[in-house]
Amino acid sequence: MIILLGVAGSGKSMQGRLLADEAGYPWLSTGELLRVLITGKRRQEMLKGKLLSDDEVINVFNTVVNLIDTNKEFVLDGFPRTIGQVDWILSQINSGRFNLTAIYHLVASEEVIIERLQSRGRIDDTKSAINVRLEEFNEVTLPILDHFKKEGIKIINVDASLTPQAIHENIMNSLNSIKSKNLE
Image (cartoon, rainbow, N blue to C red; front, top):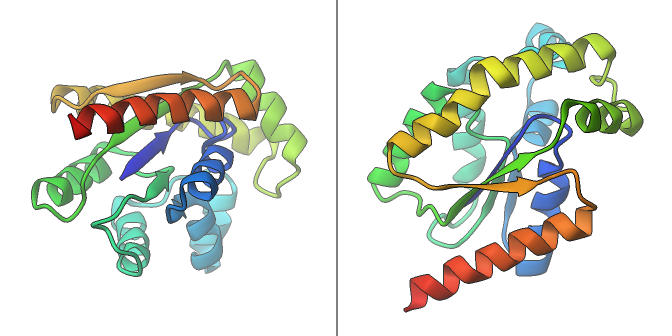
């Protein structure tokens, strides 16, 4: 399992697609899954930038991940986003359900993120929703990087302000290096 983390607009989905296409891996985009599967009032709240509960997200993720062979590599973008979700995924790794290959943190300035989000034209990319996402990322999601590190898991920071192709090449070079070390 290759995990891509970063604030909305950092390029997780684009990089997830590129990686999945090039390597032939299944790609699970939590944001895409939630936009498709969450309905009603919760969907309206989500579109305003609010995070769903851990139980809701884990339930959706668990349902979809059961459709793929988790003994083979897959790309996961946008999950986990909270300490509770990290604890759940760590329990799944520790039980042998998933094998963790790498965690990539796509890092870009707030200015780059705001510009990207405003230019992509999605209904949930309003100025107020973007501000909520940035705040929640800083308060809720950034601490999960430290949580992973405390568990002895290396986080690989990737400069997400580069072009999509340059970011992809950096991820592929890193991934190839990890995989060749694992074969030794």
